[in-house]
Length: 189
Image (cartoon, rainbow, N blue to C red):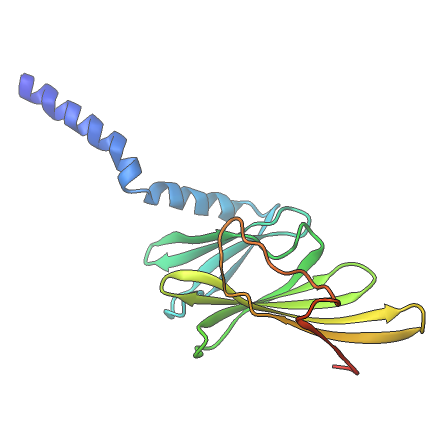
């Protein structure tokens, strides 16, 4: 009788602590919740880590938040690899498209294209790289066409920010500023 109680007690303790030791259930539940949330999120199947398996990323729709999640395909389960910002800057920018990048020496695996929604035409390309099991914002390129109201002419800018920032929930990145030292004025694109 005492042995049975000890076994039951050990089983209860194991079940309780297994949720901390083996967090797969929580991650899977998070994935399933995002997969069902078609109101706030868009999902895209893409090979994020270039292992030839389709992974899934989720990002908030415009004006629905500023989150992005990467889930890596591990056979029958998708494991969360990253939670970060979606580069919309609180809906100032809208994601136009997300596309994979062929294997390259810079480890860039993804390009995220965004467009500024106001009177000026400002497009950004965010280059996401994957190195040593970490995700980085490697660089951001801005192409901008701004009206000079004093001369009625268009001014063209190209800005490149070499970020190489480790992506996380609190990632900050450079927003287009034509007076920034990383921007050059062009005759046209």
